Amino acid sequence: MEIRKSTMADLPEIMQIYEIGRAFMRSTGNMSQWGGGYPSEELVKADIASGDSYVAVVNGAVEAVFVFRLGEDPTYKIIEDGAWKNDEPYGVLHRIASRGRVKGIGSDCIQWCFTQCGNLRGDTHADNHVMQHVMEKNGFEKCGRIYVSDGSPRIAYQKVK
Image (cartoon, rainbow, N blue to C red; front, side):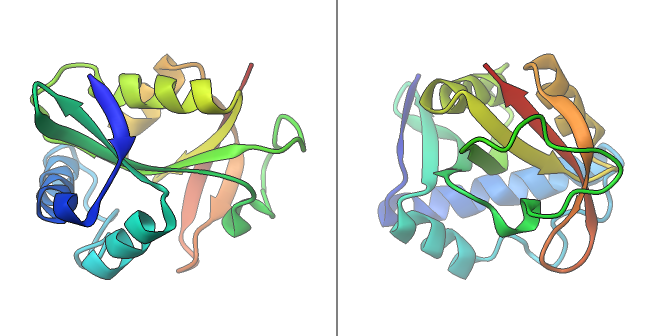
């Protein structure tokens, strides 16, 4: 498996993977996360342009996509019902999705992010039991609740070396 920065040439495959991700969420009981075509093509293009979008390639095929960035995330400034594990500089993981053809690829992407930054934060929707399991299986701990830009709550996670 190779993890590399996404390019605009990857855009059609990335959008297809996000569509698969939305369908998978619905099939596992997560009816409200990533509604309305989120993430939009404009957001994905911005992620690619900023250099924060990555793809996981297996045998020449793009199998997963995620956003990884170093630095503060504005939605993580306020945390309720808990606290972050530390106030050190951190990396964030967002919008991870896969085609569902390569077992364990989500964990592989998370572990790659952790090798880039040993202080990693992420979040997921309360209905996204699959992602909660993946994060906890990969050593993340629940830290509290944050709110994303539209005001909806998310479970906040952090993993520290």
